[in-house]
Image 1 (cartoon, each protein chain N blue to C red):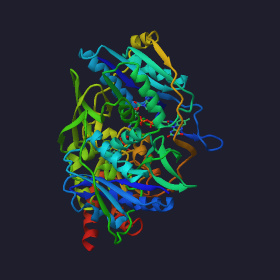
Image 2 (cartoon, protein in one colour):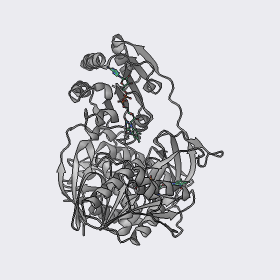
Image 3 (tube, chains in turn blue, purple):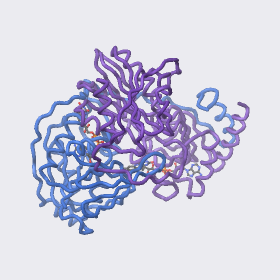
Image 4 (cartoon, chains in turn red, brown):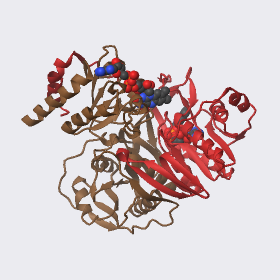
Length: 250
Length: 323
Ligand SMILES: Cc1cc2nc3c(=O)[nH]c(=O)nc-3n(C[C@H](O)[C@H](O)[C@H](O)COP(=O)(O)OP(=O)(O)OC[C@H]3O[C@@H](n4cnc5c(N)ncnc54)[C@H](O)[C@@H]3O)c2cc1C
Ligand SMILES: Cc1cc2nc3c(=O)[nH]c(=O)nc-3n(C[C@H](O)[C@H](O)[C@H](O)COP(=O)(O)OP(=O)(O)OC[C@H]3O[C@@H](n4cnc5c(N)ncnc54)[C@H](O)[C@@H]3O)c2cc1C
C-alpha cells in the first residue's frame, strides 16, 4: 500500500501576527514556519504503518509557494520516502480550491490511504481532508486518536463530544485525519535530516481554480480591557458576588 | 432572494441549543436575503420535531426519521437532498464535532462556497459575509461568500437564542436512506462525562499543571457541579496524565467559547489562550502575581488554588441557594 500524507506549512505557534498595510491580508515578514503540529501526528502514523509492514511507501504532499518545501523536508527527515509539491503562489485560494488541487495530485499517486492533520493551526477550517475524501469519492474518518489498518480496511476511533468516541470501519482507500493522542511524533535524527536532502520532491502545477469564498479584509481583535486582580483567598466572596452582580454569568 | 437552510443537531429527539442559535441567526439572514427559513433534521423518533423548531422561525422542516446512527456520507446525501428540494442559497451548520465532519463534505459535494467556525455572519450587498478567527484567534479573516450555495459553520455560543414565538412549520418527509456508505460507525464509546462538550459549554472550570495529580481534579468537578460547568485542562495537565485528552483546551485541544472560563493554576501560555480567548468572562487563580494569564483575566485572584476552589464552591452554593 502507498500512503499519502497531506502536510501544511504554518506559522510557529508563538508567532506575532501583523496586518498588511491596507488590511486586506497579513504581513508574513519574519515569520518562523513549521510543519503543522497535527500533520506530524499524521506523518508519524504513516511511518508506523509502514514499519509494521502494512505499507511500502510514504509520500508527503503539500500545497503552497516554494517555502513550503522546507516543511516537506521536515517530514522527509522524519522518515517519509518522497514528497510532492503542489506549487502555487502565496495566495493558495480558498478551502475548496486547495482541496481540489490536492485531490487531483493524490489521484496521480494511487494511494491506499490518505492521512492528514485534522486541522491546520493557522486557517483552522478542519475541512481540507474531508473535501479531499469527497472529491476522491472515498470514506473519511475525521479527528482520529486511534487507528488500525489491516488488509483493505481501516478501523478508526473518532473523538466526538465530551470524550466519547465513534468507532468507524472503513473500506480503503480512505482518508483519516489525526489529532493529538494518536501517537508521539518522532524527532528527525541527524542522519534523517542528511538523507532528506537527497529524497525526491516532485513538483506539480495545479489547474487554476477560482475562490468562491473570498478573503476581503483582515482585522485584529480588540485587546481585552485590563481586569481586576485580588489578593488572597479572602477575596473569594467578593469575586463570587461580582460574577453574579457585575459580570452576570452565574 | 435566497432561502436559508439550518442543519439541526438532534439529541434525544430534541434540537440542541446550538441548533436554536442557528435558527435565531438564520432567521435574521433569511430576512436580509428576502428568503425563508427551513431546517433539516436527521435521526429517529422525530415525530413532533417541526413543532420544536417552528417557534424559532423555521417555516419548513425536512425530516429524515429512522436514521439510528450517524454517518458522514449518509447525512451528506440526505442534507444535499434537502438543499436541492429547498433551493437554499445558504446552509448553516453548528461548528461542533458533527458540523466539522459534515459541512466540508457537503460543501465539496455541492461545489459550494465554504467557511466555518464563524463568529459573525451578515449580508452585505446581497452577499453573505462572515468573520472567523484565524491564527488561533490572534486575528480575524472577513470572507465574502461569492458562490451559491454557501455552506457556513457557526461557532457554538457565538449567537444568542431568540425568544420563541408562535408559528407552525410544514414537515417534508425525506427518506432516511444513507445510500452506499464506505465508512460506517460500528460502535460509540461513551465519554467519561455527561456534561456538555467543552466546545458547547457555557461555563468551564479548567485546571493546569498546578493540580499536581489526577485525583485533585475532584475539587474542580465539585465546583463544576455547583455552577453547571464542564471541566477543562491545560496541555501540561493532560500530558502529565492528570486529565484525559478530551479535556484539553488550546491550540492542540478544543477551542471553547463559554460565557465564563475559570483557569486554576494555569500560567496562560499563548497556546492555551488560543483555545479560550473569546470567552466572555475570564477568571484566573494563580499563586504567581506575574503569571501572564492575569493580563487576560477579567477577575484574578492571587492565591493557592487548593484554598480557593473549595471556598468558591461553598460561596457559589450559598449564592445559588439565595436564588
Ligand atoms: C494569502 C492567502 C490568501 C487566502 N485567501 C483565502 C480566501 O480568499 N478564501 C479562503 O477561504 N481562504 C483563503 N486562504 C486560506 C487558505 O486557502 C486555507 O489554507 C484553506 O482554507 C485551507 O484550510 P486550512 O488551512 O484551515 O486547512 P484545514 O482544513 O484546517 O487542514 C486540515 C489538514 O488538511 C491538510 N492541508 C490543509 N491545507 C493544506 C495544504 N496547503 N497543503 C497540504 N495539506 C494541507 C493538512 O493535513 C491539514 O492538517 C488564504 C490563505 C492565504 C495564505
Ligand atoms: C505546538 C504546541 C501546542 C500546544 N498546545 C497547547 C494546548 O492546546 N493547550 C495548552 O494548555 N497548552 C498547549 N501547549 C503548551 C503550552 O505552551 C504550555 O506549556 C502549557 O499551557 C502550560 O500549562 P500550565 O499553564 O498548566 O502549566 P505551567 O505553565 O507550568 O503553569 C502552572 C501555573 O500554576 C501556578 N501554580 C502552581 N501552583 C499553584 C497553586 N497551588 N495554586 C495556584 N497556582 C499555582 C504557577 O504559578 C503557574 O503559573 C502547546 C505548546 C506547543 C509548543
